[in-house]
Length: 90
Image 1: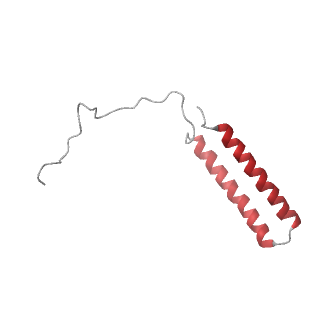
Image 2 (image 1 turned 120 degrees about the vertical axis):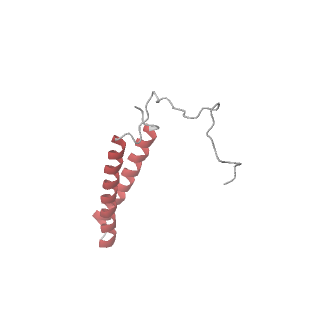
Image 3 (image 1 turned 90 degrees about the horizontal axis):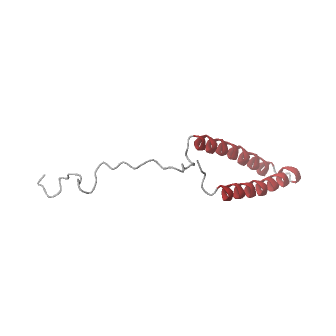
């Protein structure tokens, strides 16, 4: 199984986490605004829930692609079209 664009996904995720981590450290360490501190903590809680949901979804094959795709089953090939009611009186 192969995750598409794995290096890009990991690099962007690391960059975002590093940036938000630095902002969080500044806000939690050097400011006195309790509302902003609460928002930063809430954002980390939401991020944790999203990360867990993503990994649970990925473990069920939501993001992975097989190198050997399953054959496509065609129920109505071109020489046997689906019958319709078009053109008939209702």
